Image 1 (cartoon, one colour):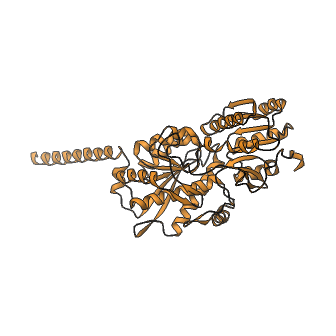
Image 2 (tube, rainbow, N blue to C red):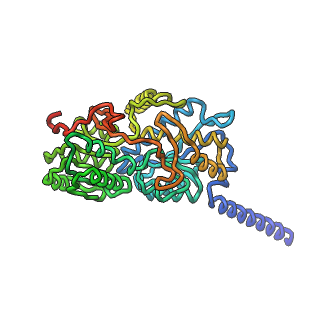
Image 3 (tube, one colour):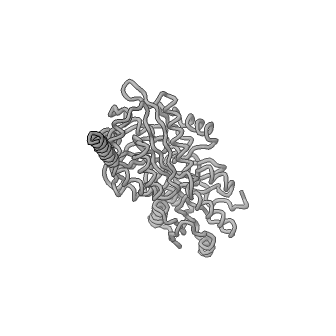
Length: 428
């Protein structure tokens, strides 16, 4: 009897000890992404992708997805990312941020702690990017966003966050600078912005550029997301500005143009930043979307090439073949994120899965790369107000016509002269 009790007691103690060790192991794994990643064995890179696959910004979220998917297709078709004498395929793990910063932060944490991704391709919106960046710093996982343009991302100097598109305060002034150089330039402007990180920054850039170029700002208003633009446009119509400039995304831009048409308001030009080149804007507005001015850092007719995608023409064909869309600068910028990671991984000879130390080295390698791609140069700033942003690209002024992105400025790069004033809606 005593012998049986002794055996049972020993078994119980062993079970309790095992449970304690198991719990201790779980606790140590939750402190960071490196423990399990370094013990895992695989011959491919696991790449997390955070973007808006649902919610208010799903249009733009799809654009980023197209760009990331095209990079994965291209690099895997060539065998993968070349490191030393071997190549490693990439596997994209998508997580929907639902166009919401909180959901985006949760998505980042899940990709890092549960999926054990090696690095991340970043969100469509600046607001989600700003919510994700502290999570990346916490777990020491690098991310490049191919879309976010708010200057407030880069002024916060997040160590693990990079971007391939120059901030809006480096590009959004281009259309008004071009219009100001015309023989009969605009004299008055109304500026509307939506109160999110990107759109507000664009509205501020429009206002500053207008004032710099001697235009009178007759109205400046930043409104909450979801605002009905009809009463705002009605009030602006009474002021009769030469230009209506809008800081928003494609949804707001479509709403502004539809409201303007319904109210019989046609300024001499609409100026908008991102969204006017997306397939949804072009498809939904048709000719009503023609002649809108915007800024871009890449267009489908540029004469650039690299070893992965070939020429810009080749990249455009790949996009049309897979998604039946002509790519814009955000889609191209998203594809270029993968090329930046590939160059940095090759530089440090980092094979998958990446340890915490390798991810630290990857950040340093990203800071040092200076590459030429089908998208243009990629070189990340390492100091100043655009820390870790790609500052090597120059802003172009574009004007939309029949879905094409016509470069109309600056003068030394333009393919066509700008049309100003633009035709009325019923004269197109």
